[in-house]
Length: 179
Image 1 (tube, rainbow, N blue to C red):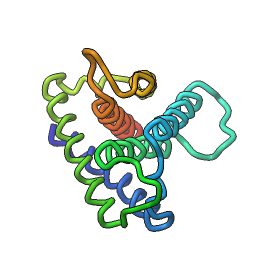
Image 2 (cartoon, helix red, strand yellow):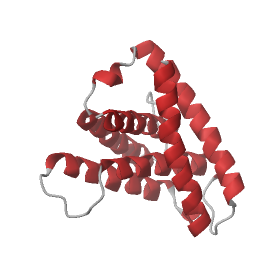
Image 3 (cartoon, rainbow, N blue to C red):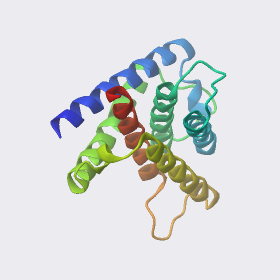
Image 4 (cartoon, rainbow, N blue to C red):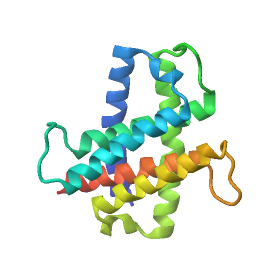
């Protein structure tokens, strides 16, 4: 599992660096986004990945990796929004956003380590296309929970679904870098 932890951290470093650079360029404009808007952004990225996996022709010169990075960062933004709430105007600076980002990564990585222990790293035998499908399934679940005003009867909440999507996207990134 040590390799997984190092690989996980390497993917997160790439995602975190992009997050910080975009925060520097754009500020925290994303703080005005409501959860359904973030969910839709993640959905667009996952649909594009699925299209790239199914279509022979690409008309935009960006591959799956950049889209998985987007999924990871948008999911972390969504987790921050769940924690802090949505605002009408950007309200945090790069330093605070980075601390919040790191907190969500720490929680999500621990979840990955716990599940990885129990599942025996089964994801290593999965296809990237299957991880994409699982992300899309989680997105449909999140949309349903959002339509139910955030309420569930027996299912895990929105936060757990975002965390799973982060972990699936990181697993996909690890697979893509190993190919």
